[in-house]
Every structure is written in structure tokens, then in C-alpha cells.
Image (cartoon, rainbow, N blue to C red):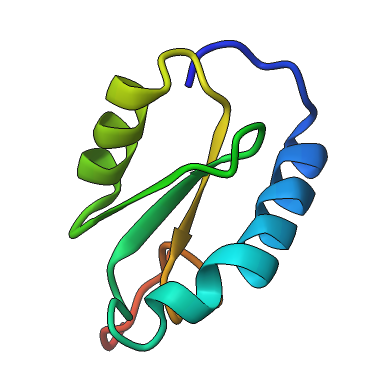
Amino acid sequence: MHAEKYSTDEVRERASKIYENDIRHLVEPKHNGRFVVIDIESGDYEIGDDDITAEERLEERRPGCQGHLFRIGCESAFVIGWGGNP
């Protein structure tokens, strides 16, 4: 996932459409909590228990692809913040 032919917004938009139209029904709820990365040009995807595994698998099959990462069944891939007491 090296060459950047698209803006961040274009990548997110294209990947979201592919996920909604072609992938969601195949992976939810069976793979909820795992990661999926989608090549926005081919629609190919890989699933992994972590983001790096999914990205490496897709990169092996689609060198130089431009992908977008989702966490299956979640609104965002990662949570940033503090959950403890101050």
C-alpha cells in the first residue's frame, strides 16, 4: 500500500462502498472484532486478527495497492483515549 493515487477522503469513500455492498454480509458477525483491509481498486480484501497481519496479507497479493482498514462490526478500527480514573 505504497502509491497514493487517491485522497484520504476518496480512499475512505471507495472502501466504505465496497465494504457495504460486497463484503459486510460475508464477514459480519462471524469475524466481528477482527480487521479487514480492502484494496479500493480491485475490491480484494484480507482479514486478520490484527491490522498488520491483514495489511501484510493483502500487500503480498496486491503489491502497491491502496487499501483502507476497518474493524469488522465496529464504527472505527481503533479507540484513542483514556479510560482510567484521573
